[in-house]
Image (cartoon, rainbow, N blue to C red):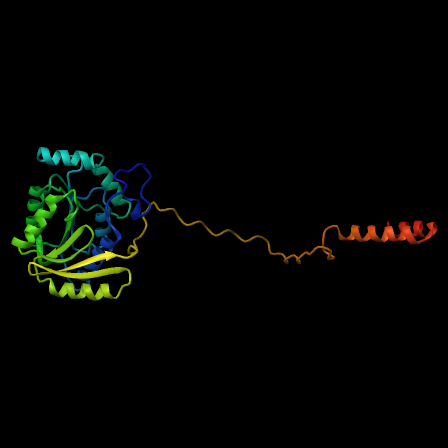
Length: 311
């Protein structure tokens, strides 16, 4: 899995942007955001932790007129504590704000609102109850994730959607603890889980779950199972060869090659078979056979006359 840009060539397509955004989650982001738009839900978008911009680029395609999109990341800035500094240096040492902005502008005409700093700055910059969709993918440390989830609850609309990344990865136990703590103690209702993300709401999960189940049952490329845990219905989804939703190429994508201009029209050549009239060398071979027969059977006078006539 690529974690740094190894070339300065601008991204041609979304897959060229380094990062972790599986196809199943692209399908789910697209479905949740499109469902909100189809129902007339309006509200801002927020992503906390953007890395090099892959999921932010995707989310930005769903920005509606009058809405705002805010992203927050440390980038190359100072971390608020030693543990966060060590985490950032180890996993995101090559990330800079310039790289994120260049990647984003390859697909969009304008940048989102960019907050450079720890996720703790978000509550003071984003209005409470203003967001319809919040994606949390910043620090994996329990203290930070706990604060990010609490902020997401305050910033979301009543039926807004929160997406929590890495909630069950083996290297992120702090995210798991903070996530399930919010479910058990903070009234966060899980809607569904993918391989690495939990989708939830502090509103009523029933209607959106029913629509999601109907959508998935209409597909052949997604496995669905359901479990009950601590009074919550949890929908588990797994890709079975899913294809990513259509996403326009970047402004740097190579233009398709122009079709080759047709050459001058000419009649097709007749097929050539050995020994046919059009076969190369057929006439000389026939003349050779005639000449040999004449030499063997005719008187010399006639043979010389025949040779002159054939020449």
